[in-house]
Length: 193
Image: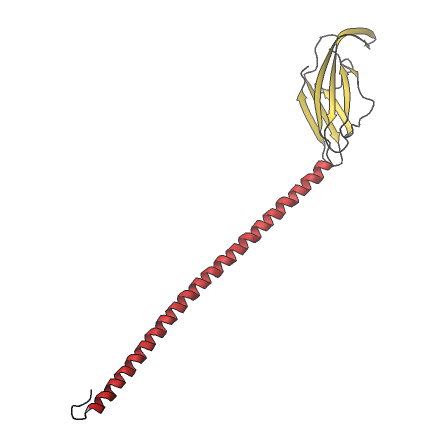
């Protein structure tokens, strides 16, 4: 501090020095605050950038999953176009007089059972093989199609009669076939007339 003997000029110098020191300290405090704010803003910017990177990675992963799903759907569409899909319906015809020779003996019945094999797929079925109760029994199968091919939206009919010895009808039908997919088709279903 200035001595009392130096007068007001000394006081002014001392006050100016104090004010200069106060301004310098204030500037230092403001720069520290600004630096702290800048560090906080930098931290927030880094967090935002990290979130943006995470969002981009999630978006890329979602796009990959969508592409995988679309590729699988396209593969399924191609497979469906190359597949035959065979289904069976049964029909009982009654009230007629159906004749056939079984084991060299004439056989007459009033009931005839038809098994319709329908191709609902988009490709033709080739090498169609139909088994009744696991076998081909000419005593039961009265009439079978002359071809082993069933085209798209086509059907083939097997006409059956009851076993002449037991009167029993087959209980199930098994169908196998080939198509353009390269996968063997197989279908098995109980028969009900």
